[in-house]
Image (tube, rainbow, N blue to C red; front, top):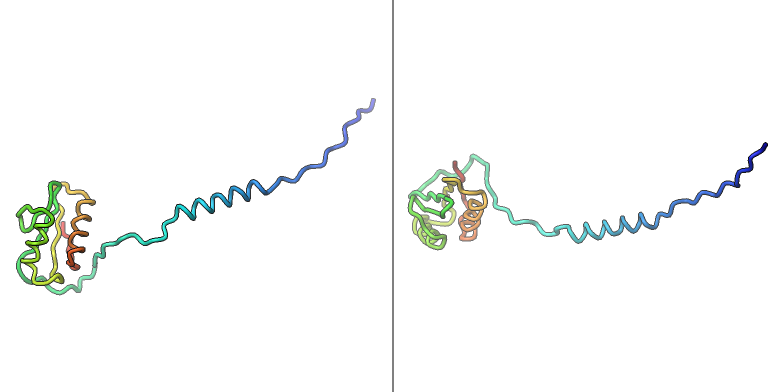
Length: 126
């Protein structure tokens, strides 16, 4: 008894078109989702070769409830006004100290406020 099998069908090669479409869509997605601009950065110097501290104290404390200059709580605008009276020039060092559970965002906001006002030498202490 002989069994007759059907003639084997020719195998189809898989089409690459759907894979090319998916790769193209991923390429378009990543191009649209990519950021092409640099994020803002606050430069912090780790160099020990800084000029010595001179002049009256300029200690800005960052607290959860706000900012203070030399222990006196002030609004951000008032802080800048008072700081300009204490600092001889914007190149004078301003000491920043986070206190009492201040968040990193509050510290960065204070640093940006001082940087935008022209104070480039910020010293961060614990």
